[in-house]
Image (cartoon, rainbow, N blue to C red; front, side, top):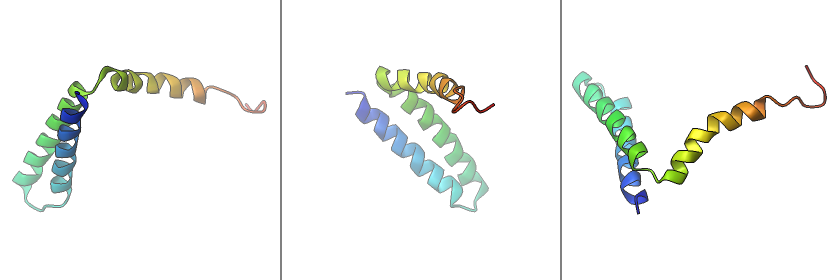
Length: 74
């Protein structure tokens, strides 16, 4: 049941990003950006291991897929 805390921290990060982009105050932007980064890191820590494994495998799979040549193109 690690998914619920991960979703809570991810939603908090999204709210912080929203405040960071929609405010004109410098201190609020700095604080919201810092909180967004902190909550994003926490959500990655709290993710279940199958999702972490998928995130780790995506760059390798995308490199392998983009390496294919279709219909003999160079």
